[in-house]
Image (cartoon, rainbow, N blue to C red; front, side):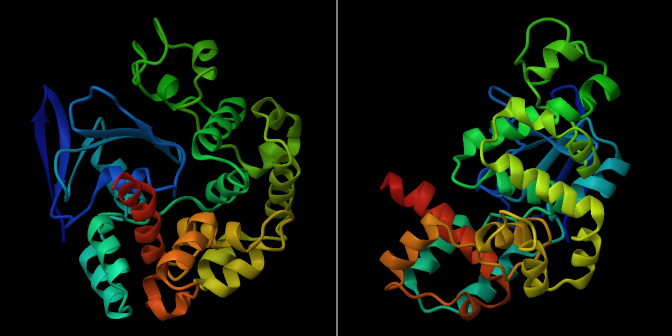
Length: 316
């Protein structure tokens, strides 16, 4: 169980949350599971990010593993939004040990040691669905750009509506923030609803989603009509059911459905297989790896593997 306390840091009231085991903010935010984070360069803390969660702006930093520091947040916002989103009640050490009990791979053990601070965020299923449809045949910088531009086209700028908007919180625009300037940035906007997209699909076009346009629209129509009921999928708490339902949407195959199951619905046994995973399985597991053998946290093991080959091994 973590501890939380209010402190003055750099003349600002901050909520310090400690006792989170190996929790790594940087690894969690930048492991490819989410796309709306913005790293704050030259901030107060070594690792510092701003992100939009639902209709709440979150400003969070980290000085060391296992400690998160939230700025400009109320206790209600922490308990109602941040605590769940950042999975702060998750026992990361327990998950790692469970995975290690299910494998004899020394390579996976080494990967787990390097990536044990990754937490699976509890993201909104709808936003996760659209984000991973956009991710198809795409790279992370471009995915983030498309998502930002879609949000700016449809969403509400939370900074302009909820904060004393005297300066850009990310120092990305000059002068006093205003709607015109902020729309060109797109980083503080809410995510569009399915109805907004169905009512005005042409709003997707400025972001240049390419072939993904028809899949985004198909997803919005399926969700709005109730053909795909995200609330009912979440209530079922079944990985198999989640994937089956999501694949009814045009353009959603096994990989996208598995990503949404893992990152949007918390089906931690989900094991998305992309080019990184295929390479890792071929090189380090002799071409064969049954995700079921990794147990109920196979999706976390997938993140260990992805992080290791993408960030650690490549630097050796």
